[in-house]
Image 1: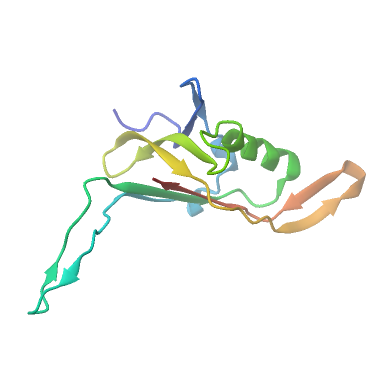
Image 2 (image 1 turned 60 degrees about the horizontal axis):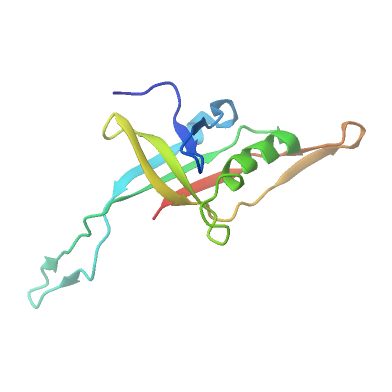
Amino acid sequence: MGYDGNLLYIISQTGKLIPFPEEYIFKESYNITPNQKQDINSKLNANYVLQRRVAKHRRSKIEFNTTPEIDNLKLYALNQLFLGNVLNQDEENVRIRYFNPRMNDYEEGTFYVPDVSYVMKRTIPTEKRIIYASVRFALIEY
């Protein structure tokens, strides 16, 4: 199939694909590690040869920063894309459709969003805006 013009989609609870607005992704920060292998009790034998057991399920990790100087309203809208479509409130996990460069196609998975830190750059009190430095988001597949 190939790239269709969007790197990420949030999958709503009704199954609708919601494109993640790429204009807020700082492109040089976008980092995906698709289909990571997971070891299960791998160990060295008596001859120090690795006996590796790998789980069948592979997990992807996606990380990116927002564009620098994003304001509080745009940042709130991005957060709502995730928070408004969580599957479990406690875990804050979401369904994501993402472009996998290894496969040159899209895959879907359930991801959790680790806690996000927000670094304020400045305020504009007259406009009632807060300007943030780049904000890092991570998506880690279950």
